[in-house]
Image 1 (cartoon, rainbow, N blue to C red):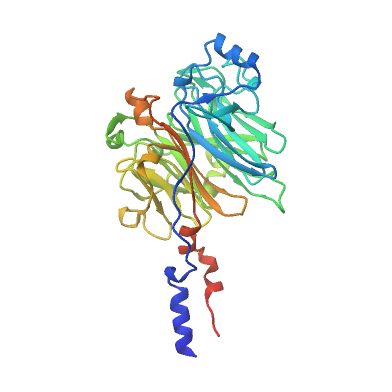
Image 2 (cartoon, rainbow, N blue to C red):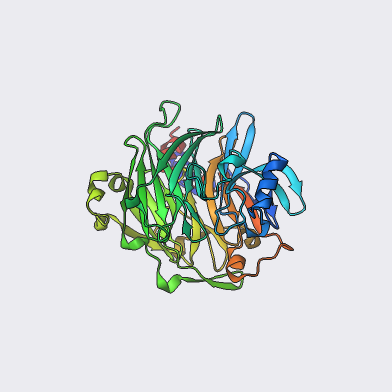
Length: 421
């Protein structure tokens, strides 16, 4: 009996003993040579064309998010207005296709996008989004077109059941510096999720990539505060990047955010370091009101990876994913191990599909299984002026995570795998 018990115990503690799941591949969901803008009416298209708002070659998609609903799934992308010629800046991918790729449609409709900074009640430049278990999409609108701050940055919350604006929060001037700041990445943590909760208590963490800070929004208080730390700054030794043989300089600071519900993991783009700070520290508003650089001892260096990476995401098993620049690799790391090159596990993937992954999310599919969604945009070609519409430039890709997660189950599930009879 004891021999059998020991064998079963060893098997239970061995990752390879977990039910085998075939290794998953990266799947291309959508791809474009150049973005294709659709319009609900000919009048909308005419408005965009006649005012110089429709210049397809000017658009670079930055973020992706998918939403499952009873009538099917939708995929959203953002196209920030880095320059003029962008007719709308938040879109849903339609089922129609043209030679350059699938046709986009404005979300929620073109009227939200047609002011181009002249009406701050509309969307000026959506940078990234976050979709929660509450069927809500949080949109960060930077308020910036090109190098001009047309409107204050704002947080928009859309009800995805009705496609209506549920809430708007405009950030006060103390939360940003016009032009010097660029709010780009929202990460939402819901404290009262369904089915028991009512989605009324949540925090949104927002990266300021160019003024090197973090803005925290509290839905219950309907207010925001700002935190700053030296770890949010770019590392000048890692501001020159190489992707697929192209070299460019990008000194972006605070960029990527992820959480395991206890810690906020973050890194500047121009860095190979990963950092962390407890959410409880960031959520303590009174601590930050008089000192933007409070609690420096709460911030810690987690470790260093082999190369810079842009977006990152964490799954429910606490696997942290990002795509390194040089070489191009999809990697994962788990906080149970030291954060260094030794424990940087490569996930097999075609590097051609992952040239500058600027958006990354973990979502559950209609079967309740988690998938990693990414958007790549070959930004190195944009930066060097060598982007051409004769090649595929923008891709939305996804990868199921069940094979990875079956090898690394949550620690709390270990006892359920021990058999004593």
